Length: 81
Image 1 (spheres, rainbow, N blue to C red):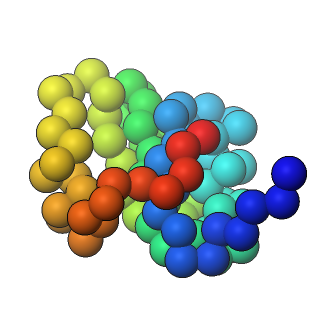
Image 2 (image 1 turned 90 degrees about the horizontal axis):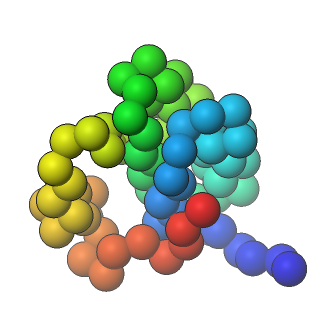
């Protein structure tokens, strides 16, 4: 499958090796915003270094509406990984 990510908003669940690689790939091929979640602050800090625009610690209560508003994503995400 071929999917164009230029200008799309992406959510990645998990900041392990595959999730971190996905952040870099999504940013490289033109994703507008990349959000990623994990339960490890160390992994989330790595995700920021890899280019994630916003990180979410899944151990905390997640207010998706606020996250979408803060990131100017009125429709939510376009792609989930």
